[in-house]
Length: 172
Image 1 (cartoon, rainbow, N blue to C red):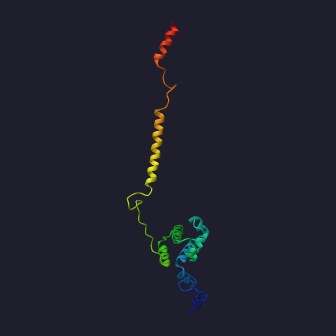
Image 2 (image 1 turned 90 degrees about the vertical axis):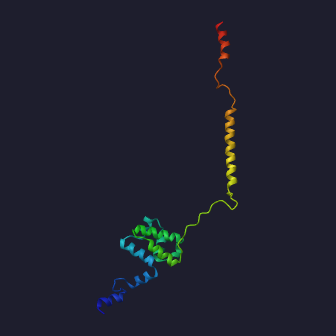
Image 3 (image 1 turned 180 degrees about the vertical axis):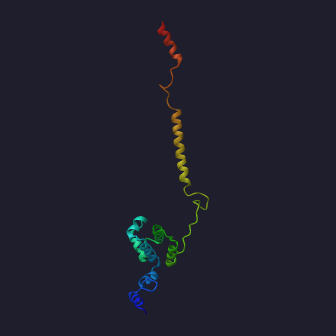
């Protein structure tokens, strides 16, 4: 073994340039290791990633350290990984898939659309809607009647027949 190889071996660095510590971390936490190495390669700090992605700093630290149980939930973890990947300009799909395999998660399928109509064919809120429609109709009828039956007073033109006798009285 040559002196440089011996030195690398003593320092925990393999021939490909990665340390034994890095290899063990990569095996233990491939998702966090990938995120951290890409972030460091781009020269970004966790604070910068947090500000750009709007992901809390504690959540980013938990992602990088592989502490997925410290995250609010698997759905949030996937979203955080996607946001982190967007900031680093990398495709986060492999990370999310690795996370799903690690957690044993089944891909989420959309829930089936359920009609609000029950078995009898009536909507549970149908009575409420009919009551609202009846009240609106009653209001409209009341407004229409108040307009039609409004007492007529000074807004009508004075009839000519009532003015004619007065005009003759003034002339006489």
